[in-house]
Length: 511
Ligand SMILES: [Zn+2]
Image (cartoon, rainbow, N blue to C red; front, side, top):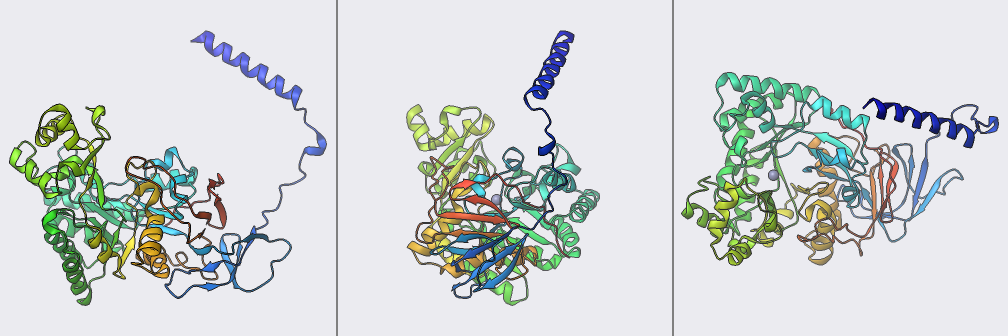
């Protein structure tokens, strides 16, 4: 090892000498002083503005100075302005993704190409009960190593649960343990989290009682935070799980947000109107309830959620689980550490190839450590009903490197499929669901609208050409039609390429 160290030292000496020889300091190239940080000003000329409020589109020019929208109207650019001609393009506020899983992805790919390519400028992390911890440390890391997008955090319920219960987290907690968890939730909120997320369908969250969550949600309510839930069941017992979320809202006196609202088994297909009616009733009674949805008929999760009773060794329970989602041909294995050869195949295909039954394949996979699956078990008609509600927003449930097309396609897909092709939503309403509505949910007062004085998080896209391209076989294909994206007044995406700029900030709640 010594020899290596010595050799390294020599290499460094030679390099330093070499660079001194090749690049001698030249007195004329030395700057006299640092250039003064002149604010960059842009003028976007001729775009059609869809401002996020759902008011009808209008034509105007927009000047950006520094990180803010300085002027909206008709005016001539001044000589110092950088001019961007945008005739034929729509200018909208940057999209705010309330449900994103780039927690780790940002560390490896802070330019977040697949996110900004969709027009996303702010992502919320820490969903489904699982968050970075400590909150302050993660936010600090994002400040040290900024991303192209802004980042906001939630405290994960399963995360704090595991911190208190340790390895033994699949059980009910004692009163004393709940007090300890509440202390951690409090800490997370003080460090900058916008609220609490739960993932009650997953093991650690599933073991908690409703009373435990009410106790923790009360802490969040005191901080005027938000309760965000992947509810306990999204299939046969979805309505029951919804009632639990509403009860938590009432008893903790807290706004409730249902993550990726869906009806994912055959017995509840077609019940979107009933779900909407129940939420509408709660809203009329004064409960502040909203939801988000991603624009696909397939979910992605761990294979074990197919059997909500958790009787993974009971062939009848497994058979029912597969039947409930419409059959084993709807379950695609996307990642299986014990059997990489299964990846890209459905349970039906694997069973046929191996001369066995899908139930046997399921049990073998679970015994071997499980798998990630994509399951086509939703109805587009239910999704359309959800999207038509003014309190349902667009969120991706995606993120960097996600093995589901929503990771690279969710927002453009809504604009292509549900606005342009099916006309389920007007462009104005769709943009509101991607911008001012999630901004209001987070309490962001200067993002999510195109207004003078607001932060210049902006997206310019071609409404005739915008199109998701990611598929279940090729989930990372980037969309087309998003032409320019600004984050905090700086250009991060320019005609199908990231600029490499990383102006993203960590957002803190304004309470
Ligand atoms: Zn979820």
